Structures are given as structure tokens and as C-alpha cells.
Length: 243
Image 1: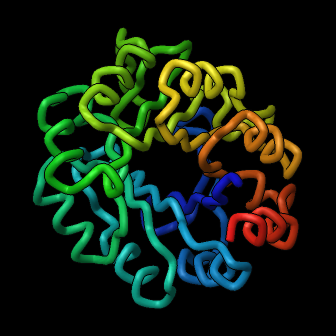
Image 2: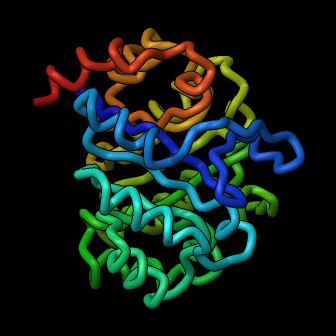
């Protein structure tokens, strides 16, 4: 059964959502990250994806205090991402309560270092962020495009023990037009032992059902929840079945 992982994206201390990763096209939500996290926990959710957008842009995590607060006030496991580039960044994230980290830019700029993290921290603790536009990897909060093919990128780390990959089709992020199911199927077909965390485009519970049927390990969603198109009560059926 697919794992349900809500996303909380932070910029300037506020919960926001972007469209297609565009920082000039953001919507601020008048909810505190702690209250959101508590609400998720109350409905049986066990993991939350915390995105430090400030950190992603600056190249080093900024919002450790929000990670610490969520970890301190809930029993949620936090997958922390945004600007992680060094062993010190990872150590600090774990110190402030992260259960896992997801890193993307460093896996492009220093492939050997990221590959070493899979071994040194353990493949259960490290997720590759492989977000793409037209099948080409984008990094630095999606503000920098590359010519790196997503499947080739994943393959490099898959052969070095990678277990988890978080993939967003950037063209679908925040658009509420449906997830990139074909992309996820392609990844699963080529790398049958990998666990895909699908992100972007989820509109409703039916989309989550479709991803579940496609063999996706987990779904990360944000806007559909914040815009009221997915209710936490609707998600409980996935959570109960997964236990």
C-alpha cells in the first residue's frame, strides 16, 4: 500500500506553495507548520516532507528551527530537504530531529559525495531528489536546469545502493493537473528494486489510487490538500490498509 506523505514547504517562516517551482508564483497559506503537522499526525500520518525553500535557494539549510519544532511537538518522522550539501548539514538535520534527508543539487555537483552518503548514513536514511523538466534534471530549488537525463542520473546511484528516489515532474508541480504516472512507471520498470516517492500534480484521492496501482512506494502532495481538494479523512483508508 502506498505511503501518504504530506508536504510542508517553508519560505520566510511561512507555509507556501509554488507553481512549477516558480518563486515569483507563490501562494502563502495562513497556517502554522506545527498546527499542520499535528493535524496530519491526528489522522494517522507518520511521515511529513519538510521543504526548506530558503535553504534550497541559498545552498544551505535555513529552517532548522521549524524542523526542531515539528520533531519536538509531534511524533512524526520528518523527511527534511532543501540546501543539504555537506556532512555537517546532514548531522545538523538529524540533530534537530530529521529521520531522513532528501538531497538533489549535491547529487549533481558532487556525485561521489552523495553516493558515499548512501553507505555512510545507510540507504534507509538518504533519498535522492531527482526532479526533472522534460526528463532533464533541475536543481537549486529548480532554478537551474541541467542536460542530465533523469534515468541516467538515477542509474548512477542505483548501481551504488540507492533505495529511495523522490521524483517531481516540475511541469506538473502545483498545477493540479494529475501526476506524471508514465514517468514513475518508466523509473519502476527500469529500476525494479527502487522505491519511488512521487511528487507533483496530485489532484485528489483518485490520483493517489492510480499511483498505488502503478506500484509507487509513496506519494508526496501539498497543494491539493491546502486547496481543500483532498481531505485528511479521505486518506485514512490508505493509512489503515498500510498498517
